[in-house]
Length: 496
Image (tube, rainbow, N blue to C red; front, top):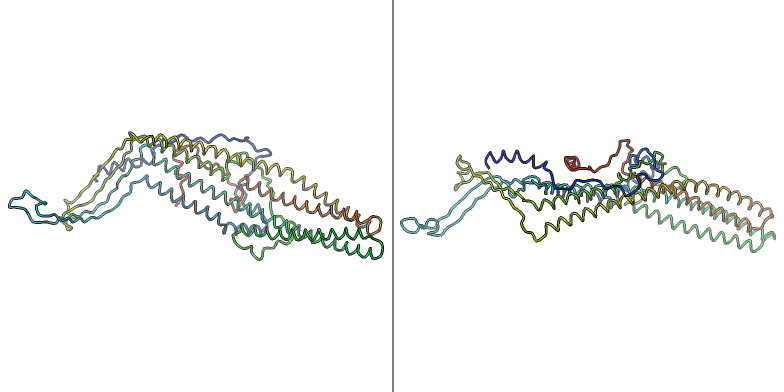
């Protein structure tokens, strides 16, 4: 290769690497939901609150850490990201020429009269020719004048980034699922403890009724009524024991490993705060920061870049082939001063007829872009519904919890009075039985509401993008994808 060609490539390559593409200008689609989520207000985003701060229970923190280490789905998502990163680097390599070094020895034998049949003195004898060469060069390097390769590079990069956001979304979901499973097991422990206490009280009432029947101060009907409450409590005890075992299995599956033996669920929901409150507020643009929404937008950007590659297929393609080295008929002459050799072969290919393939490919790229747009808008709508539903539940669950707590307090007082009147012979056992059933039902419902409120806080934290950070951060989180084509692509490339 001559020095002139080398200088030409040195000048043109940087320009080609920053060349424009035929991609349509990217504009983020308008949000198909209201600008503000009903009930939202300004403040820190949940995504800036680390899960260790939102879940203050040390046991829950430990379980989340175990799940993040062992979960197979999260591991598969991480491997998919690594694979997409490798594929992106393969695609990006097409922007640069592939330079190879080669060494060649060529030996050919010719029969008599073939080497030089016109030589005087008759046909020459058979002979053997040897040829040696050493050099470096590149072949079929496409000059990306119209941005076809860069558009494919942009598409591969956005597909990689989309998978990375999918991995982040899987992590967020896993953190929320572990937290929900943990508080569910705590609620099961609480219900089991209440049922054991209720069964003990009902056994005592049954024994008392038996003694009163023997003393002639009670009836057979009261005894059988007391017996039914004991049997019902025993059935509930078996039900909650089974439910606790099944919910522990769910938690263990999420962990991807056995539950550590020193994890203590005793105390249930009364053991201490497992979930913090979200008091910082909800920014109006939170939906655009969610990993699933960002993943959908990256897929939209990738589809938009594919249109640029499809457009470039209608234009000429320029490829270069060249080499520089030495050649000689003798091995000892390879590196002599007069053995230098070089080739340079530019080629221009202009599409004339492709049977409509290029037109169809462009149409398919545009349809894929429109499909990705609809999927992006659907992701925003799904995110809006999740946040709106969680906020609606949040506004009512506190009131329901207060009312349910008051109901349980009143039911406990009513049961004490009914029990005293029965023991004093003022009322029949039916009044005490009804009061006892009402108290047990109120206790069960209270624990159910407490569980729903905790799960709602976890769901809201997840819906707002929380669960990605281990420790909190007050740094602002802007929208990740750039809104224009240009140098921002390089800033989004994965680091080596």
